[in-house]
Image (cartoon, rainbow, N blue to C red; front, side, top):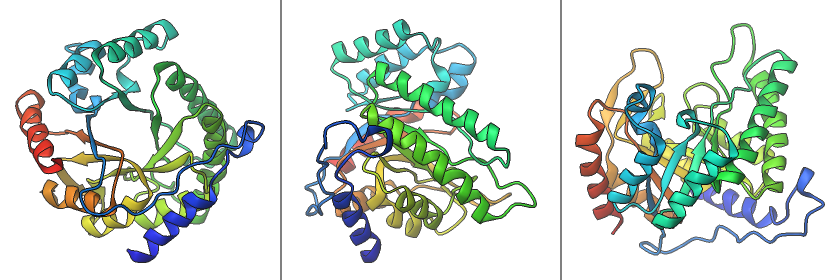
Length: 300
């Protein structure tokens, strides 16, 4: 853990300027990820719209009402999952941005569903263009970060090295473009590729940009959740807390998350960004307020 912390701090200190397509912009200094003493964190609490995925899909909930719900819960932010936008038109996105601004409720980020795990280069290129499209939309929305994926499971007959070769250069192109818009991309340990802390860290270090980090999903590991969470926290720019931790292997075990332990780990690392509850159980309207109140107490 100590070694990964040091690597992450060096990573931020050396990544001081925009890269790639952003190189023509003025040299922007990015603050180093300095260690912070216990309880000098700045954890901000948000809620992922994905928590109401069934309600969105059944047209029982619209994004405007979800924003109101986050406001009523006295949250620090609202995570607006792109899957559930009723439109991709700029006017619609600007309307959501205006609503959040006037409520005094920041948009903590958005999320998309790209997939670079494909042996066909032309298909990977389409995914790059899709990510760039959503970078433009996030800039209009006013979202500071976008949750992205590496992709799904590695196809049979292909190696893990091929997966790195597919993800890293294509993701780097997206990161360079996002940097030019002032938006951070955050790769998730989604259960396909990458899924382990080692895989995620290897990709982040290879891309080596202050505009790229980890969207740590606390529930998506095949085993040994807390060790892998600890290894990814120093690289994390967004953390999504799952109520239930489920193994990504078929028929793997499931257990309730120890939220107190996770928040303490974030505090010990001096985490300063958003912790978004991503609820995936059966009764969100009943359970989410209780979990939010619990997390608010833990954060203090």
